[in-house]
Image (tube, rainbow, N blue to C red; front, side, top):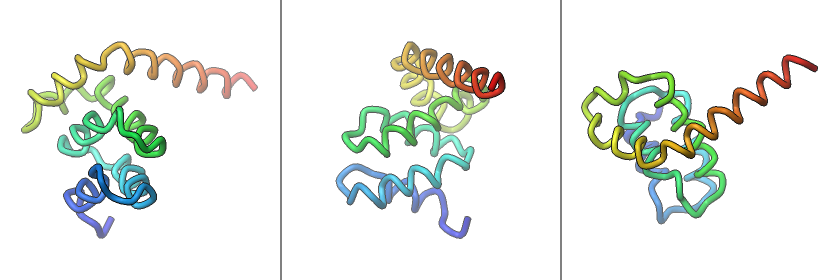
Length: 105
């Protein structure tokens, strides 16, 4: 919590060491600022698997938080969400299935 979102976004940027990038993305997952969501949507195709995974988990926010697409980065968020709509829908369905299966155990 002591590290500002802007610093974590900078640490998650492509070109840095994979470990710190993945950790920065993981820490950003609990934050709900529009710039964090925009950063995650930009990193959905990142070459580092852990960064992609954290970005995917954060990108699912667009499914339930429509206000994020109306904020200061709304145009960019909407464009990236629309470009990835099929993937986001598929990830959301998979997540719901896993939760349903876990409850049924």
